[in-house]
Image 1 (cartoon, rainbow, N blue to C red):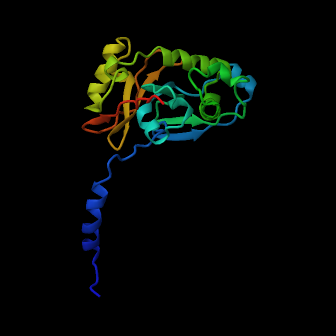
Image 2: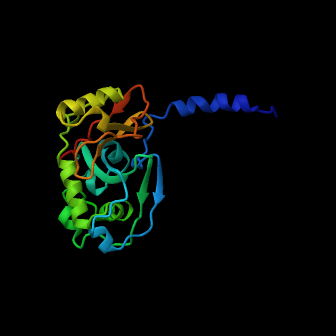
Image 3: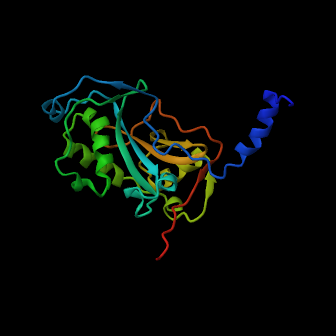
Length: 234
């Protein structure tokens, strides 16, 4: 039997890999670039507003990419353009705190169903990020709602009905045009496998735009943007 060498085997496999029709991006990009767990705070400390971080990163996930592989997810039912992933405390040195207390979170998650239709995601966001905000659960999610609703989605993306490709700089320009009070230094584009996964806005502790510091946009030459999947009538 003829022995197959490693170069020959790679030559056979590479054409198969190139045929993948739609490589999946990472559906839930994490805050960048590293996390640092802080000592747990008591609910009283959190309510007192002890905020051991520098600014917030508002992550708006591009839902068509997530819903492409999670069509039954609660947040996919209405086929929105962007959904709120989270409001994440960040530090200017590039780190970010996580899991700062064991406080359970809002007593009534349904109060925030307009921004988190999935109660499980709400609890995760509170436990991982909200506990580091120095705010009570209700104050934190009210701030998240305010920040989310303050961002206007560019019509080009809100009304998208076919796949397009834009550079990260062009995407930032679209958001600046729709949101003149948000400077380019407060915006970052996140992508996976050259597909848009999120737009991120850096905010101070009162939810006003602030420079992103170490946060940078993805380095793709062109970011592919897929449209929301249209629901079909039964």
